[in-house]
Length: 439
Image (cartoon, rainbow, N blue to C red; front, side, top):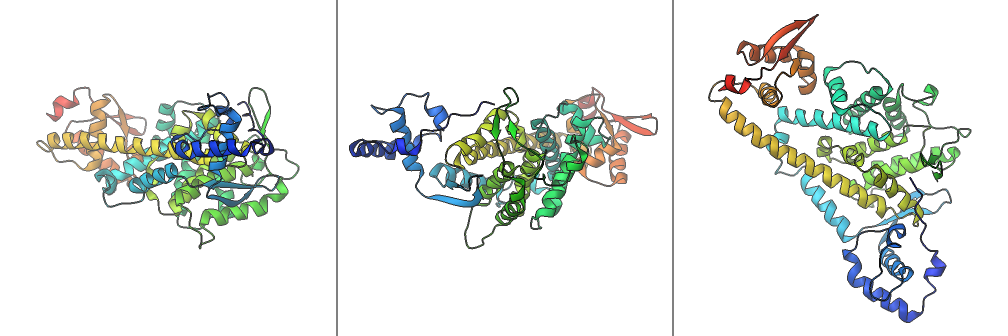
């Protein structure tokens, strides 16, 4: 993507007459709270308010943004710190996330139900694995990828392997969420996410070396849009990243979701690997929120929404780097992505709840089935002739093989699925008149 235009230099901005500065600040103190967090590259195309020039408008905005800024222990290649400012709109978003994702007492029934919540976890793991890989160039259809992960078949090519690796990585993150992150765990996550997918297999699971030149280029013009720090700095930088992700120093509170977003940016900025940095950065975001007890993030996929606007995702990095290392650009974009993901989860929960209640009411008039069997029947009503196997059912619900087998055999016994043998595998197929059979 094209490199954004850098804002006017600071000395030029401060070269206004005092009366003009006073007018600018007075205007912005009233109006800027309503404004979007725009970069100069966007603002320079807009019509300034009243009789201000664009530079005067930008100066006023920058003055306001300096209030309450906090530096973090991340410096750029010139040793200038990155910083952010907590603003009202940011706090409002974080409060909304707290209410919906912090483990409150008014959780939707499908999340509380230990059987139903497995469905949502598997769905989110699959969605995040697919879309995070597609962001990095994996090209396969969502349907094919889902079938591969659900059936447990081995990946057929590099693209499928990227998705399979991402799935294993997300599973591993859930297992290690209670541990503190360290260099070795970051290397393990990188190895999991890149195994068998890199041009040079020797670069899997290790940091880049001083003799390995790694830059981020625009894919069309080949313009360098990001030059990461020298490899010799990585041991120190990674240790600082781990300390920050683990929540240190303990005497300074930072909202956990903000911390996770900054961790996402931090690893991507340092670019410590030859390849696979984006996938590892998003994996580390998930580890951070889960480590800080925001366990409902297990149920959402941020990459699903990053994939819908990859240019905006990339631009949020560049806007930060080209405007005084202002992390608010990246933070605001990620908060928007998270809120979209949460809304999609709740929409899915509400839809599932309504469908399930209606279906259960009808089904209980005839036969009594467990939650997993009802889930198959509900899916089969919408997708006649769908083929189900014991292995897919087992993987979807994380149950024992015999339990999955008994679920399907009981449905076959009631003639709601019919069974056929293909080689050594039994396949259970939903008839197109399932609704009539249930009635």
